[in-house]
Length: 182
View 1 (spheres, helix red, strand yellow):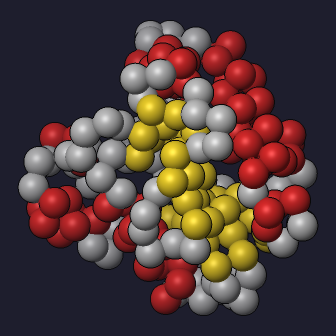
View 2 (spheres, helix red, strand yellow; view 1 turned 90 degrees about the vertical axis):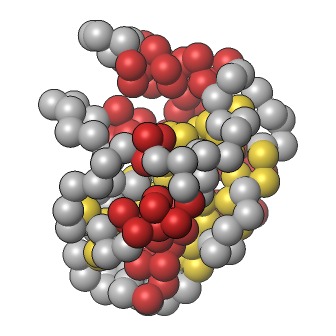
């Protein structure tokens, strides 16, 4: 695991991945998301790593300046969503309120990993998200996801948070980052 996180460039104020998908956290995440049945024991080590990172490395978190943790709406339909379970547990560990229904998906999108062209990814995501209300207007939020591939989803959601939600600042935390840009 990368001790200081992996810096993520984007339209957000600051963003980090905790590890590469090929690393320890990626293996844990894979066992959680893609095993049948999911290995729910991986939730604790994954959220322990995320909570420790926030407490040690993220100044706005340590200063109590984050208003909410916002999980990115999942792209695949599952009975129990791993990202929501992870966000819920991370919220418990950090004391951050988790707003599950603040970011809404307006329509289904295909899995982006199947699209190689960045323009195609952007087109699929354009207008695919909205906010439920403006209750976080003027506040700082932490956008949380499990895997960073191209950054297109996070970019689109961040735009929605700034333009529709009128948030003051978006910070991004993802568990893993792929080593290829697709």
